[in-house]
Image (cartoon, rainbow, N blue to C red; front, side, top):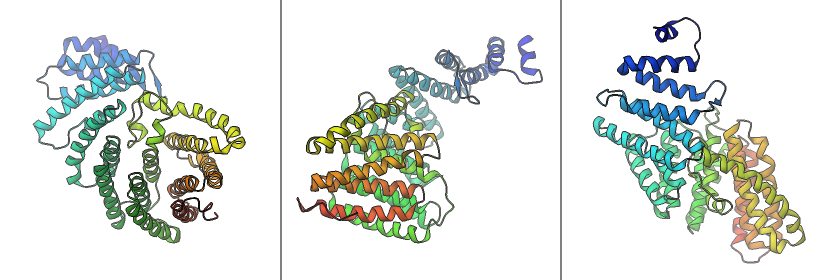
Length: 425
């Protein structure tokens, strides 16, 4: 009676009071109260209004899973309650460094998703994207690519739905690229570019997202030696960027394009990025919200060590640029990518936090081009294109066009061995 009175009483009750009440009532009415207890335990583990975690958040989430598993298998709601409890618990396990257990819960989530899809006839299996992300973080890239191929094959025929397909395509591209399936990755990127072009032409998406997808596509073509195709894609991007500089966006502005840009930026630097840190690496085609909490924390915390390395290497590069400048440019590029992704994830006012890094990167690469014209011209073109995409993502199309024009000139100079420092910028 006291437990029922707590729930029926007027006024605000605490999550702790709810949990205590549902624990009592679940003994006498399991069918009604076990699902409510599982949800209450999850609410108690994390206070969304204050953003604070309970000191026993992992234990509370594990109890929520145990409660959900104890629901009668014949109950229709059991699968959804259990899936949600597993999802909350796996995040807490990852956050506490218990990656093996967190990964096992993702496998259980996928099994539930497959069973539900089989019953409903829905081709989209819930849990596939989380499973693929977990595989990628463990370095099991071939399996991650297979999982994302299965997911995209199911969602692609349904067409774009509120941008969800674009994010799935980005994860698919990254998984294929990491698995060494370059031909498939490039075809997948072509699919993304074509979709963004169609969506922009019909007014359902931003022209900027089409532009950013073209820039990312050209980067990947370059990385796999498709230089002629990359040059054609860059010319297409130049035409679109020129239009944007002249007329601006046709759609109302939003923050969507900034997140799209940040994922493409992380994807472009995934190779050099992995060479400067140990431990699990976040899936490069996913937003930070899709990364496991511990991998995300490690990735973002690494900025501090990178900053120290860059600062320590800078005076040595001044003294002996032939030995140290190229490495300084590379490390600074990784620092810029990680910082840009961090601040875009943290605040919509990210631009002023990272603007100076893009400027410093261009200045360092310009200095390298004087000491090593061939290598420096390519690094300078890359950093100029990175800064151009940054400008475009924050609606600065004039500066974006200027940087892009310069970059095209330096890409031409990079093909001429030791022919001088390239065009003046």
